[in-house]
Amino acid sequence: MRGQKVSLLAIQFWKNGFQSTAFYVLLLAMATITGYAAYSGWQTYRIQNTIRLHYQQQARQGWENNPDKHPHRMAHYGAFAFRLKHPLSMFDVGMESYAGNAVFLEAHKQNTVNFSEASFSTGLLRFGEISLAMILQIIVPLVVFFLGFAAVAVERENGTLKVLLMQGVSWGELLVGKSLGLMSLALLFFIPLGIVTLVLLVSAEIALTTDTWLRYLVLMASYLVFFQILCVFTVLVSATSHTSNHALMKLLAIWLVFFIVLPKTTQAIGGYVYRSPSKIEFETTIEKQLVKEGDSHNPDDPHYVALKDSVLRAHGVDSVHKLPFNYSGFVMREGERISSAIYTREFSNLLKVYEMQNSFSRFMGFVDPYAAIHYLSMALSGTDFESYIHFQKQAEAYRYQLAQKMNELQMRYISNVKLSPTDKPYTISHEHWKEFPDFNYRFVTTSSALRNEYLTITALLMWSAFSFMLIVYVSKKVKTL
Image 1 (cartoon, one colour):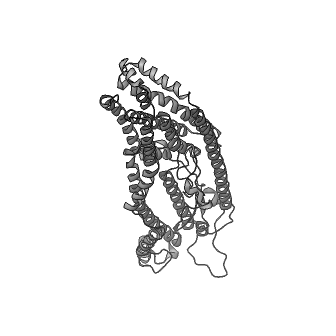
Image 2 (cartoon, rainbow, N blue to C red; image 1 turned 30 degrees about the vertical axis):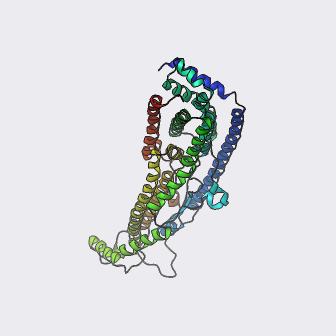
Image 3 (cartoon, one colour; image 1 turned 120 degrees about the horizontal axis):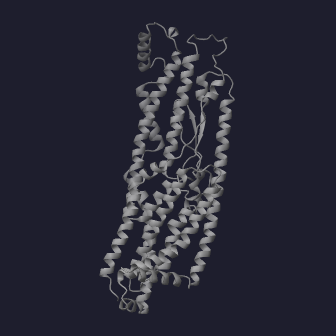
């Protein structure tokens, strides 16, 4: 394959693109949509993070300003955990609008993450949000199809295809040259969005880490591979079509099926094949397990009666009043350990169902490259399901640490002697509240995100390799007429 001829074909295709008035209309339309999507993403990110940081600080102040209290009362006073938006959520909103962002953390109970943006919005959100990622995933592919549907077919219609082949241009050179030319035009729509995303990151009101920049670079590289696949397949469809109209109809059908219908259908099938329990079913299962294990608030519960006897024997005493620690705090600590273990086990089982649903959709990346870039983009932008679960796990770990810290304070500082109705309740210094750190949400690392998306990465690379293989195959099989 001769590079000079490939370059000439690519340059010629590039120049021809600028001769169409429609091309400039598309550029203007894309600039308008990009501007709106960028402003919308930046505004949502700024407002939401400001609100969440404000209430996180307010909740912390409320915790620290509590007076001297019994530590178990503080365990039930609880704390709040707020999920901050990742800076790259300005690029890809993913499932941000549907995932909760705040949870109340208290002893003995795992509450649901609430306050999603969708819960406060109108039904219009169901039609989707315009984001920079959505433009690159849905709109730009349609633009690529429009710019490239006539790449080879028009040469056949005008009779210039024979001339090119007679002048010594091979089919392989023709297909590669046209693909490169189309890719260069596609970059005119892609690069501005990449620059806009870069500007949005710089404007973020938090310090950007190396991990964030790595996410950005991998994200942009992934979209480049995606557009390479689109451009090659567009040219191949054009080369195997008798007329430009036939090529356009095929590409529009491909866009409708692979970018609109198939993704929605796949999600529905995944949810049907791998059915997940409802919230009531999930909570009922946990309640049954707790009843079976024992109730720490019931002194006559068989499990805790046996526990009491074993503790008294171990310390060689005949009454909990003679123990060197507060027995009620010890029981609460044991109850928290058991209930947390049950919740963690059942939650892990629930996650396995969700993982199977998501894996089904990710496997579709081997059939539909849109599915691959869709899930990979969300993961790198910190707006996927794994990021949401990552927050839930951090919040639960913090809740457990808080509850157990209060139980340990009770064991250490609260007497076993029962108070009379006229006695002042047992309390400890409020200085202990400040000793326990505030909740600090940590984003999923890039390496973890990439490990979670090994299927989509493999699918995207497979599609890229397959597109080059098809060029070789089609160049040997396609005919001039």
